[in-house]
Every structure is written in structure tokens, then in C-alpha cells.
Length: 256
Ligand code: NAP
Image (cartoon, rainbow, N blue to C red; front, side, top):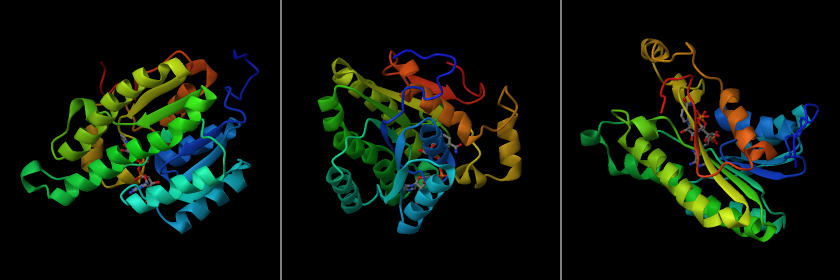
């Protein structure tokens, strides 16, 4: 399918998208972008209240979709969410693995829990979600998987060895999976945000944030929608010939 100037569906019309961590921040913006372009969206949150608020937001915005509970740190919660997806008997055609956490500490002080929580949520969770959605995509002979990494997975950052390991792992994982499933017309790509204004970066002090903004050639912190636009592009028919790639959305903070 080709795009015309008047076509604002981006070819995601009628597709079923699953966005993890859609309750706020970047995931909420991704869900809104995909939903506004005509996709049906299932958004996940770690709590029932979060899932309800996703559904309410979709309703308000006229987006077709629902909210479900998924805690990637809990194998049982992952199994329940996957079972729920299977019960609906509809195959996810766009999977966005967005959910992520930080547990920052210098390595010498980092507790095994801080390491394990980040690896489990940010990397192993994505392994389970890809496995759960791939079968349907292979059967349909089409699909889009978009994994949210971070500039930190490429540059590294003191105090974030756990986070950087998980995010670098996402990039290697995605390239490998892209090679495995390309013959089925399934693309697997990564979007690597820089500094984006969300609850995750609200934890930074004003001085620290200002120092970081000074390192950004575009001179501002990114908005969640800056990342969502790149995700929509990869999910769209316009992104059909891109796979195994990492798109950096960082205002020029890091250039390859
Ligand atoms: P955020 O505002 O903190 O939102 C995190 C989302 O992940 C929430 O929806 C949260 O759900 C969900 N989540 C947290 N723990 C989870 C778990 N155990 N299982 C399932 N979902 C869980 O974060 P954000 O800034 O939007 O970040 C989104 C993604 O972008 C992350 O992968 C992050 O690493 C990446 N990123 C962010 C930045 C940045 O500057 N903000 C930069 C680079 C990369 P609840 O609301 O239910 O807790």
C-alpha cells in the first residue's frame, strides 16, 4: 500500500496494536498516535486502575481499544495477559515494547535486586511479549515489532549499568529477531529516545536537567510525542522496508 498526501491512516487502519506501559509518558503518546491513525490499541498498565484509566483516555479521544493489566516483573501477570490476548482470538499485528524502569546506582553499590528488576522488566519482559505475539504475525505473514531502547544503551551512563545493559540488549535482540522473521514480512526495529519529558526524567534535579539540555543541539528536552511519531512511522506502510534498525530520537544529543 502506498501513501498519498491525503492519507492520514498511515496504513495502520484496522490493525491491532499492543503497547506496553501505555498508562503514561512515552507509551501513552504512542498509544494515542497509533489510535488516532486508526489502529485498535491495547494498552497495558501494572494496575487495574491504570488499565481503567487507559480505557477512559481512549474513550475520550475516540480511540478504539482497551486497557489490560501487565506487570513484566511478574511471570504470572505476563502469563495472564498473554492468555487474555489469546482468548480474544485476534492477532496483534503491531507490538510496541515500551514499558521500562530505572533503578540507578553505581555498580559497587548496586544490589542484585536492582540489577534483576531492570533486566527482568526491560529485557526479559520483551522476550516474552515477542514470543507471545510472533505466532499470530507469522501466520498472518506480516507484523511490526518496535522496541523502545534508549540512547544510554549506546553511550552508557555512570550509575546506569543495569539500564544500559538491558537497553543495549534490546538492540542486539532486535537485530537477531529481525533476521529470523524477515522472510515472513515481519519487521523488528528499535526507537532509542534521548532525554524525554516524562515521570522517568522528572526524577532529575533542575540543575542536572539543565546540564543535559545544554548537550542537546536542538536545545530542548524531547516530548513523548516526538518518540511516538517515530514509532508510528515504523509501524506504518511507509516503514515497510526498514528492519533491524535503530532510530535515535534525541535532538542530536548523540549522533552516530
Ligand atoms: P514512565 O513515564 O516512567 O512510564 C513507564 C511505563 O512503564 C508506565 O506505563 C508503567 O506502568 C510501565 N511499567 C513500569 N514498570 C512496569 C512493569 N514491571 N511491567 C509493565 N509495565 C511497567 O517512563 P517513560 O519515560 O515514558 O519511558 C518509556 C520507555 O522509554 C521506557 O522503556 C524507557 O526506558 C524509555 N526511555 C525513556 C526516556 C526518557 O527520557 N523518558 C529516555 C530513553 C528511553 P504503571 O503506570 O502501571 O507503573
